[in-house]
Figure 1 (cartoon, rainbow, N blue to C red):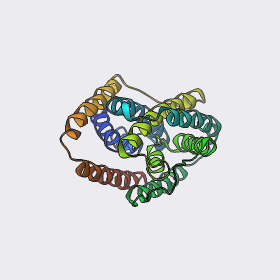
Figure 2: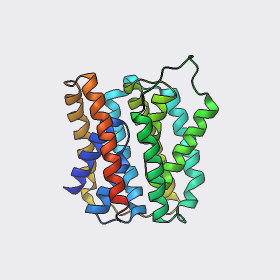
Figure 3: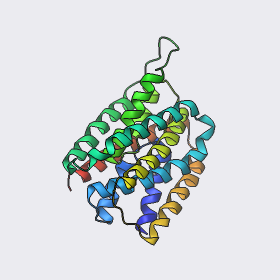
Figure 4: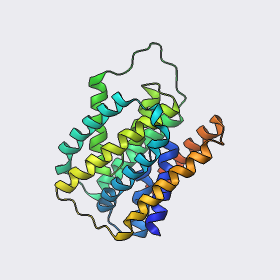
Length: 244
């Protein structure tokens, strides 16, 4: 039941914001499964991947596949390059990184977005650098990257909410999967029980539930719920991480 609950919660958070899956799953794993922070961050990559792909089904028509693919490739490079350094990073270091990234993302999400003065968007080089940073943060913290990608897509690429959500879910799903595989090859340890499959049930159930709910909410209400959810997830998660 713990895995089912975690999958349901993470699936709902990912479906509403396109991010935050790891920020909520890490404290859940620490609290209910009694895992150390580093192992919880590795397991979080699995549930973030599940939450991303299950919710992506509902938003795939809004996806910018070109940019999403570029982010995935660049993040894979960042994950591979940074994986050997994670072993030497203390838990407090992981917590600090979580805090910095979370604060920046929170400011970006709530800040009013000003219209661009021209039609240009960041090019391949800048987009690749963003992807590399995504991979590094994903590896060090277990964050799937959505809390970085969503604010960037909204602020710099001027995507609407659906475009940002869909592209973030695609990117986060693949980058989390790649980061998990890289860390496993690099010797990371994780213990999975048979009840782990309840994560799959929970995350996919959440995507169906959200699809039904969002069809009944107005755009204004949905936007408000997304921002509030994003904010609550960050504060609750960081409170738990720093209490470990």
